[in-house]
Image (cartoon, rainbow, N blue to C red; front, side, top):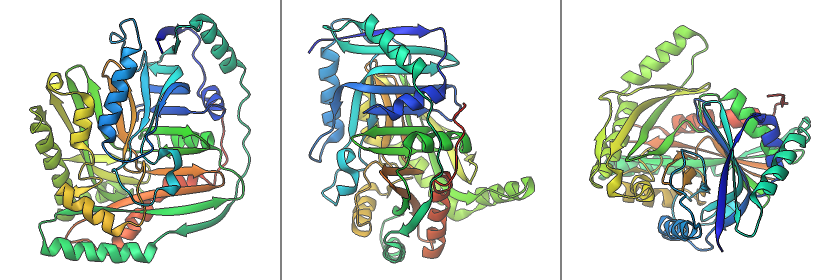
Length: 439
């Protein structure tokens, strides 16, 4: 198949309410907004889709698929700015595994698509990218899409009720934490990140767009991401970037260590300073920084970062945070860097191989997209991936929320269980609220 693409500047900016209403009708659909809210993109329908039916070498197979798509364009597609032109939207699995994957459906081994229609906003300027086979009329496709966008009916908000909440494997998970602490204390393991799910059942089907918009309003300093396909959706309000690719340079970050926000400014400052002074959390965060740096330098990249962490504050929690940049992307491809970094110690552990083995031992289910790379990248090698935490998998009336905690030698199971419960709160609270779509 031969493909063509066109980028059109939009003089009349669309409303987010219109975009999410149209997204509710689209399959597949993807939305992505940065914490600064100065960049977002929305992908509707697909020209081509990638979702492997078996596990193993997902990054390599995604690279092969990307190369094949590039070859289908008969004109140069590398000169576009970030988020414009053909973009691949989606996510990879946390790790390749033979573990139980039924919960994840079509997302279980990763899912990406090349959208027919892509709406991008950067610094308050809006564009539409249309991509289609050579046999189709791009002008007519664009006109029809913009007409649908202008005339789509806004979503109607309705009350929904929580029927039940079930913390799956709660006792098993806490026992796994204790066993992991004992293993760390007697071995070369430094850290293992253990995750657990919380299942919430609602009285009615969950409106995916409603939850995404709630998170956008209540968790402004995070990425806002939704991947929807085949009757299920993965939604995330993650504070953590994995990679952002620029020409010959990229940015990543080390995020680890968590404490709640204070009820007053003074208490908030006190809690933040306590986190900065806490040896357990500082050690955990130092593992992340050192491992990321080592992995990047092994690729021949020039790495730089501040010597001390800073605080990353979200409405519910605050974290230790270190921004990291690297130069030398002319030596490697973006997906090669992604494979080298993921999973970072913030989501896997240190050393990586032994930590992943312990995760497989403790966690009964595969993580799917939780903790995994999710984002977009263009065929010009510009793009960004966030880490799919503070997230939920939505299927009909059921939401499965995920949260993890970094386990080190000083960890206590009861405290780690409470920390994960704190991380459930943003999505848990949004499921219960009505929403104003007039944004």
